Length: 312
Image (cartoon, rainbow, N blue to C red; front, side):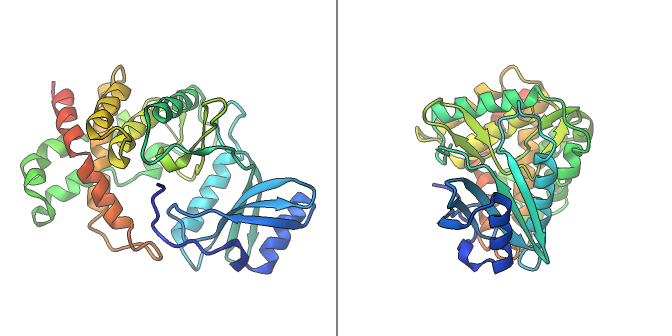
């Protein structure tokens, strides 16, 4: 099932002016609303149907409710507005800003989320989508990856906080930190990257077996292997329907043939989650830090494999 970090309010709770603005965008009155639950944002999301039989997906957040989510929606709108049609992404129709609120209006994507848990079929579909994204030069204005992920130094920070470490982490933290050095250089590139590959950020079309990537708030310019590395991490961290051994094997398969830096990035991603799990909770997201800790812990067996790879 999709991870739930907060209780999303229903679309009916948004200010009336937002609903009217969405109707004006489509040119028809709203006749049906199906609220969408799950995800990380404490704002409403829904598939909205109109009197002219059109439908859109809407998601909204107020800056006063969660300033970081509001910023991510702004970033997502900026990225979606410049994506070429070759990218397997949701299509932006309109961005609505009224007062402290922002609403993203996009085309609905048919299908269901890739997981969790992942399946062998959904992993393959999302891997193909990642490969398609990696062939696209990043449009002008899309920032470099480390502008989106400045906290990939988690293991380096934790090395100075020994009381926060488990016994396994304490034994390996110097190796973990060393594996992530030079990340500014080896994550750099001119290729488009989604940069938030998770099972609940990919929609699988059951008819064609293709994947569409959603939630582009972290979209960036970087190395072409970045999304494959993130996919490998999520397959293990979120879990696979056939169990952890299959998840770990498929993660290694995803990294096979990629530069060693892809394995380093998975190590860095785990360090980011582990370090961030020690911080105060985000407003309206009381379980997010536990989720980050669980992901870092789940990656430990894979990281043991990857450390051996990157140190050869």
